[in-house]
Image (cartoon, rainbow, N blue to C red; front, side, top):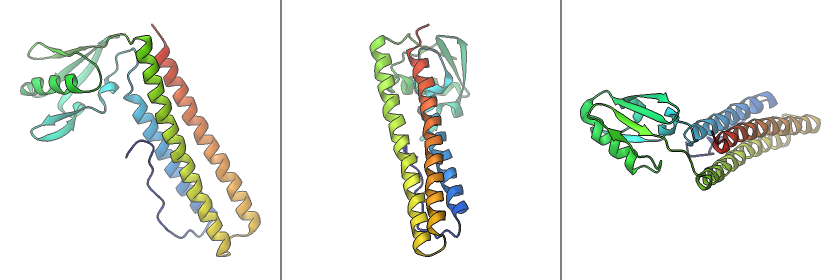
Length: 201
């Protein structure tokens, strides 16, 4: 799934407000999960195996996640070690890290790859926070799109006389509350990550 995108609601016909709300909640949960996953791969000043989440390594012609071809460890706060399951992959893994946009400088001793995680400069931290803000905004838009789809379903149900005007008004209010709740969760997660990025140990 592309950052901030959700599965579009198909033109399905709903028979109750509860059905629409249940589907909207599932889609919002997916947006939040996608945001948390995207955030995990953002580098902070501390070593974490999650920074390699988006890295793909050519494993006999198949781009594979690094965690599928090696064991990753954090032996100390500024170091990640990578132990390939197949030692012949060591050069391929090292090259994938070097050519990625992670800005890291791996070293291998023939058996193990050591990746020092340098402290981030103030400038780099600001850039990362800016990227985080863009990511958060994309996902906020995705949440609002879910709300829009749900509201359109309510309007259609009113038009088809499945629900009354009062029920539609209540449904729209509930949907707004649900959306606000998810946006608050997203903002809280982004704030926590921002603090982590700017926290200079």
